[in-house]
Amino acid sequence: MFRQKLELLILSGNERILNRAKNIVSRYFLTFQHLAFSELEKGVPSELMRAQLVLLDQQDSESLQDFAARVDQVLHALPRSRLVTVMAPSSSRENLAGTVNNRVTPLSQAEFFQTLKFEYLCLHRCRAQYFDIKISDLFPMTSVSFPVFIRLSLNQRYVAVTHSKSVLSDDRYQRVSAAGGVYILQKDSDKYAQYVANYYDTSGKGMRMRARAQFLVLYQASLSLNEILLFDFKSSSQESFAQAYESLQKAGEELLKVFESAEELWDLFRESLTGDFYCLWRAPWIAVYAALISKRSGQGNPVVVLMAGLLTDVGLFDVEEKLSRAYLLGEGGTLGDSSDLPQAFGYHPVLSLNRCLAKGVPVSEEIKTVMVCTHEQADGKGFPNQVPADKLPVEAQILMFAEKIDQAVLTTMQETGVGFRFLKEKLWEKENQKADVFSADFLAAIAESLI
Image (cartoon, rainbow, N blue to C red):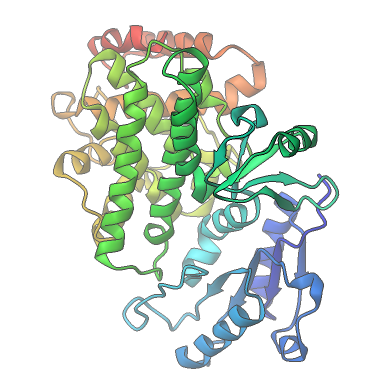
């Protein structure tokens, strides 16, 4: 896709940092510019003013105070940009309390060079700030509480065609219809869901609309919590953490209400979002598939399943890049059975829990127990702790099965084009024949929920 807009601006002369950044640029064909920081003193060229993401590094001998001054200079010079700062090796969580500026995400040396966190930020900031909707989701002459955007075909920029708290006139509706794709900001997903709830009933198409809209709310809430959960140097007040967690739980509980419908929702959730970024953050899909199994099979607590599923993969971004990349993207390894992966990978649920605890996320004891058991097996050969079958929470088993479904969606389904229902049935049959990861009783209990 041709992109004229500037996605990444690199303000670093460090060769290692440049090579790391250019590796991501080439992988995803990001548009980028490289500029010496000193050039900002001469003024910012107009073509750089809309840079979506800026990369800046702290010099080895540079004090935190001096670096903070340079960060402020960039924030002032590029008021529409978000920043990723790479901290010097001497910086640590002990001597840096962290930033609460929502435009700045500091990364440690290890986070930047050894994990997928910089890649996550590049794709999130540059390719995943909008959710796509259909113009047919909206009605002419209705009040819209959120701005609606179209994407220009030449430079791929998003342009607002309606503003928040405005009436979508017949004329504007027709003009937007002719533009093709329609988009909303991620942060407006809750307003969009409320619009859908106001204008669509709870049956047929209306219920499916509600389900997708609420899934978008859940996805956005998980990203908001990630903003302060994934990164070592990113800090926030306990009140902010509690609020972000509460918003995520509320979004999940609202989505669970949709499951009361008899509508077939599997394919709807699977198709809800596409793009490079959504291959890196799969937790919402795994959590929703698992909650759907729990709700419709009567096994486990759907709320516990959902919340544990949304948190247990946070630790994937603390695992060495080659392991997390192999697992998530199938590069240099297998994206299939988790038992084939190195044991170091198996500790990511524990890393997830540790990060939640260190950041002060108010996770219940029940959810904690489920989080650390999502890669344990019925035959006692899972990891990290080889928990006996009679001690395994059923919610953890449901999450493991849901993760296998999601892995198959990204591999088998894309490679063969088989239907989703057929894929789920074949996966169930395969696991039933193996009888190692899951017990026969468990598989029998969830069988009908997969239809």
